[in-house]
Image 1 (tube, rainbow, N blue to C red):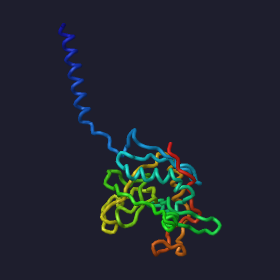
Image 2 (image 1 turned 90 degrees about the horizontal axis):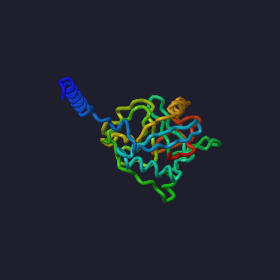
Image 3 (image 1 turned 180 degrees about the vertical axis):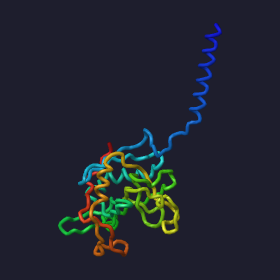
Image 4 (image 1 turned 30 degrees about the horizontal axis):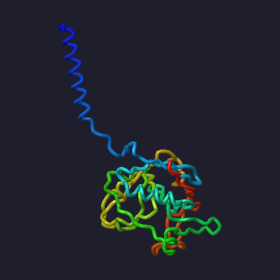
Length: 222
């Protein structure tokens, strides 16, 4: 082997070694980026479509629960009944009658009819954060009480990732994110709202109720 060829061989080997070391030091992408195991669903609403990417790898129980309710049509005809423009839009459990302007808790009605929703384990420690555009489970103060109601963050909400006494010393479980249709989410959050003391839930009148709630028409797995 000539000296020039030998030097070229050594230079190539050294470069390959350096590249290998650099690659080994490159941190793996976080699961906030999701991966090929993610599930895409289309949420068709009266205000337009919202596409969600769900993360069954890091939130299997949450994703399974959402897909189960969607497959049964539990979300069809429900509305975003709670809208706070600097916080979240929440839906999945209530229906709205335009004629009477009244909301009805579909989950409670089914419970009263002997078909209660099952609660799920709170996967709030899965590493997914309550940042703008993510979807997570609404629940009561006890950690493992989520059933069918969900919310979409319209701002970064780090307090929802924090264990606090008032929230059962646990955060709120994120299980996906909006990948298209955030303009629809922003349109929903910008709608006019009002307090509805005449509609009582858990002993209190509802607050932050849209005057004209946006309806979920159906949810389709793509």
